Length: 114
Length: 112
Image (cartoon, rainbow over all chains, first blue to last red; front, top):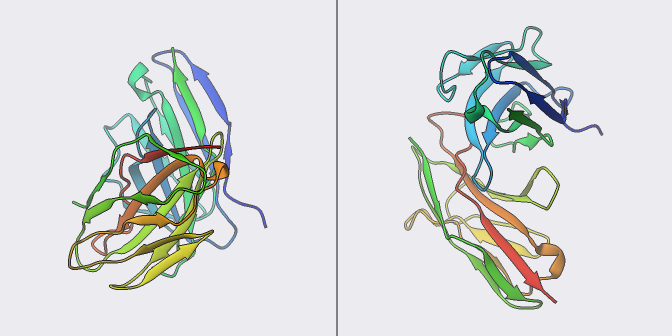
């Protein structure tokens, strides 16, 4: 079946601009995660949704970052006033409801802030 | 919070050599443990998992045993192939939160 889909696959933006990154999880997966991966490093947790609500947003680095999941399926990560340090691959993952079920990752959106 | 320590890479091996990638973790409660793999140009994929002490996860010839007493989850393979060249990530999921905590990853390069 279809996996986690992220769009766009690449995004280049100028410093100070606003960007939105989209994630379509696997159908039926109730949990959705956003991670950020910088070059040569492991993924860093940003935010976790259970259904429509953000169950844990402790990984968001500052208030320029925001994410929504209004209908409990598609999620959008929003970054305001982008900075060059925001350049990274943004990964989305989803998981079926059972606690021990694994996360399924999308291929990510590579964000470059110039 | 949860944390992971993985051996630093790159690890360079010849084909058919034995592989060990060490992983130790700290996590709250009784975490589930995962290894993920990232092949060149591809996304993260689950390689194997173990959900309780002494469980052994296995897949594609790779194995890892959940060692609660040493808080370790070392990845092993008896005979690596060139196609195993990738970056491997150890990741516990503690039960205080629902997120995976990733290590820095270990790059494996297998030469023919």
